[in-house]
Length: 415
Image (cartoon, rainbow, N blue to C red; front, side, top):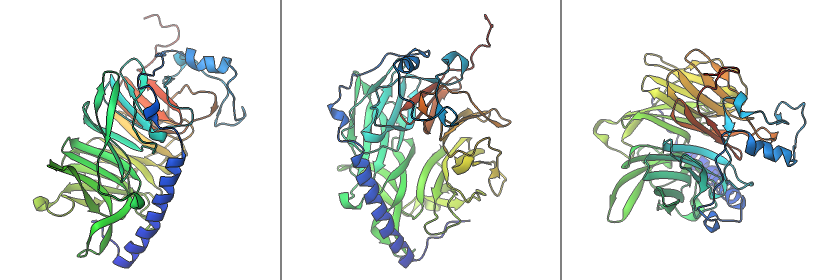
């Protein structure tokens, strides 16, 4: 079904509530740190580690364990990297900060973002900090290539990068036209080219309300061709909170959203976007709801192609759609932990990550837990996953970066 927007009085009231929530979120984000990363040396880095040496060193030094051994969410012993699929790779991320998302253009050009304005780059050997100039939490990152990268926090904090050069990167704030007192968090960014970029998040006020459809709020920004004044972001009407955007092409898009503020049963909303006839209107796409069979929030959507779409979310929810289906199928999940992100190299090689160090792998038949090396203490929540190939995949989360480099040889295998 096509999404119908609520009546004007409810939309306006909900917008006031959402705006208040956005302001609280903005203040909380700024309070996370009093130290801007721009003061750090962008060349700061740590040695690459392909074994447990760096992690074990912390344990030998008497690193504090803030949980008990009998707690299933506690790591009291660091396992050897040789015995697990995923290994910790040290990064210079501030101890008070966390990673929230990851993206790359290739194995030697990987970016991770997070709280405190953290933006780190991996060049194939080590991770280094780059100065963002902001202290906001950055929630999503995407690029059309190594020299065109976007990361977002809220409607006044949209950053553009031109790539990693001479050991650092330059990030500039893209003007969106929002006043500082009317910001809304942004949660997703995706595009098909430098000129086709779409950003989604919570509701924000529209400059020019859509009186015809009784819409006062927007939830997406579309990049329009740069003119004399540079990039212009078009505000797209809508009420649902956009959590994830993915497309197989410029004409086939999917979004995971939470529309429970206006319709309580649409917490796990999955929308399919196709080009609007004539390409007219605030959004050149028409969005159709595809039944997710979920009353729970679905945090991420991804596909290996237009005929293979996946979504994951709260309480281990996993959903799958293929052409001809009128709804997403429920897929058996081995966990009840909330799942935050999904990525794969193909239809039979998919990784999903979530709370308490959860890492799941799909081999074309079923999802199974993967083995992971974790630092001492409470198991970190994992928020982002991305890879350049089946044997080069990264995961980021609460102060940790994990790397998968392919299957490990069996014990005793001398080949």
